Amino acid sequence: MEVRLAKTAGFCFGVRRAVDTVYEQVEQAEGPIYTYGPIVHNEIVVQELEEKGVKVLNSEEELKSLTSGTVIIRAHGVGEKVYDLLKQQGVNLVDATCPFVKKIHRIARKEEANGRHILIIGNAKHPEVEGIRGWCEKPAYVVESLEEAENFALPMGEKLCIVSQTTFNYNKFEDIVEIISKKGYDIIVLNTICSATEERQTEAREIASDVDAMIVIGGSHSSNTQKLFEICKKECENTYYIQSLDDLDLKTSQSIRCVGITAGASTPNKIIEEVQKHVRIKF
Image 1 (cartoon, rainbow, N blue to C red):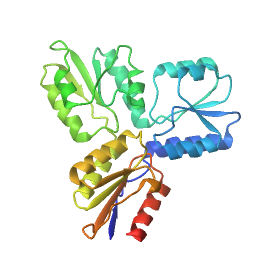
Image 2: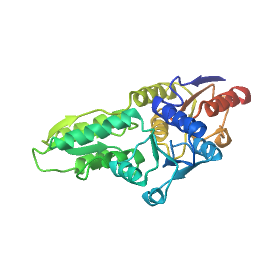
Image 3: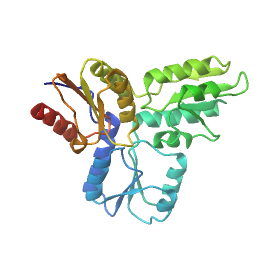
Image 4: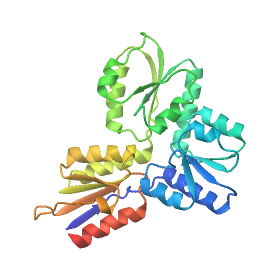
């Protein structure tokens, strides 16, 4: 059986930087170490860090209870309020926000100051989107679907800045922008989808369209992995979404001659290698 592994599978720059930052703090920081929210959306990575003594904080209430230690800001970023709170607490702050996400924070702040409404194309419940909204003085709008784009309404001629969650589906982003662009607003559009996301999605689509089965590896809460699965599923009905080798139940038959493998940006290489090796040997 032929196995085709995506060249873009695995940790992206922002995730690698964030995870490395935590391990550096484990080695050198004094006192307890925390991350605000999971450092990345991969349960296995978070569990391994917990075994190193790194605790995940999930609320501002938990932050307020701290009197010492180091708090590392997750790769997805947070709103300005969290930074202010950490400064008040007097704990050591280490920022592991992905630089591409940080750029969106600056854009949102700048364009809002220029009198524009901020519209984020993405999932309103995703930590990255929540963080971006946290850098806006006024409530930012969020649109995720074509239906929501059709229903989006502001007074004619309003000034609008459109940005995107970094892991959003590129083709869907374009479709949503096209719909909103016809509504008569004064619009500037900034495609803030990470280039690594675009490359990963393009490669996944190409592989999935040319294999008999497709395996997508990533955390259950990983937005970019979910997008990869959706893209692959459209091209290859026989697509599997797994977090690790334990989840793999690849139904094989003589008709399956080629299997493709890709992985989300928060998936460790060792998990990808385990799956690849298993498929090669087992089938």
